[in-house]
Length: 230
Image 1 (cartoon, rainbow, N blue to C red):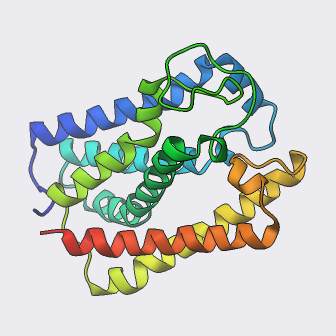
Image 2 (image 1 turned 60 degrees about the horizontal axis):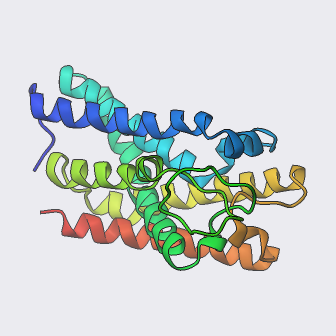
């Protein structure tokens, strides 16, 4: 289904809800005193995390969608949203896929060691890992992918051949170069501690392979999602 060019209350409600849920997830981090204190002492803070960068892109895409829902004639914003979506959609898919796989099977690879918040969590029962509440977990690591998938499949047009073969892969590759440089840069100031233990525990060559593998997964995800678009 193509993006609507007229006011639609259900669309506005959907996009507003998505923005609120993602905002809740990010704002809730400040209430996790132990985790937030540890992050605040790190160079780069929360922005080290791919999750937060992906959340920011997804939040912005949903906010633009909300504005377009109220003011559908703003064609320049529509183009901006399409440019954001081509990165945010596969990125959120990669983040959710990797996070929920590791949190279920290998939580020590995704969660930092340290004191825990005394709240129920979707993560490991191990007392040596940072844990966050399930509601925050879902808002950060599930809602962006779910919202963007629903938005793209039901409210947006699929990308054409040029976007599929050039725009998507190029955008994701450039973002991967940015994030790879950024996270390596932050680690230099954080005693070679990365935001994710699976990066901390591997040498540079393996980390490069991880960045390349995640990028390839993102590109393949983008191609598959676009192909499945009716």
